[in-house]
Image (cartoon, rainbow, N blue to C red; front, side, top):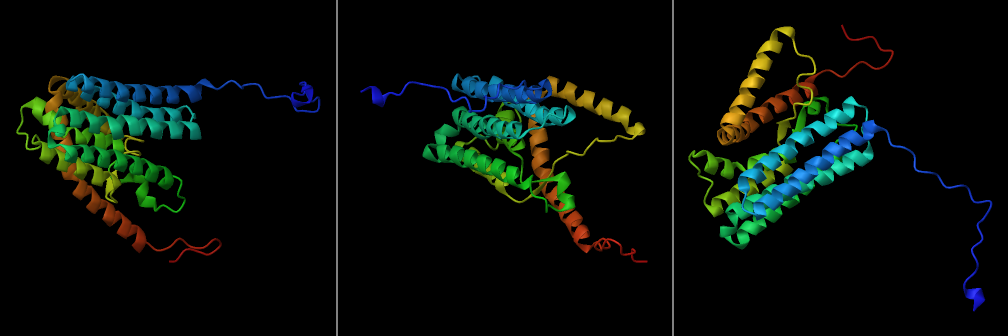
Length: 278
């Protein structure tokens, strides 16, 4: 019987285990912001379950603001990591893939019956596919140079904000053509397809890297005016902004196509050691 349970004798030749190494604060701050965005997305779903749709929308917007900050702060602090990128994708799916679709479903799309729930599933699945494609494309070394300023398809935070347009219109008192459940269902599927489409969408990542001095003051005034309007007329600003975003997509896609064509038509760079053509 004693042979079944051998006494524990530590192996003296076994290398000592590594102690937990301290994690720099510059790595923790971006991940903390990501977790706050995740908490906002989860809380938005709870508010929707309680029928507090206004608060639910505000929490989705808060999650979007935090999501726009974590990556920039990580790059600023030189705290980017593979862990942070994976955590950001998971948080984005919850906050922008599952949460907004559930909010819109509980707000009124459930009256469409099973079709409304199918639209929720389609939106969430397309959101997951959009995130997976983004993670793959960002590591592609063969991406054309012009794509540095564009996303492929509507990014999932923008898709979440666009999805809630029926609620903005309802709260603002503007004409709401998206209020019928079946129309809201069709609109949900449209936004889902835009996320997984190959439509070039302006990313704005390099926007404002260097601002000319003469434009600093107008930019400050425009930013203050936008914030003032957003706080004074939140639903109207969100509704008009969402419609303007949708209308701008064909224009941006056309501009991206011209940039891609210009890059293809440009002469190839001279080989190393070869003098440039006259």
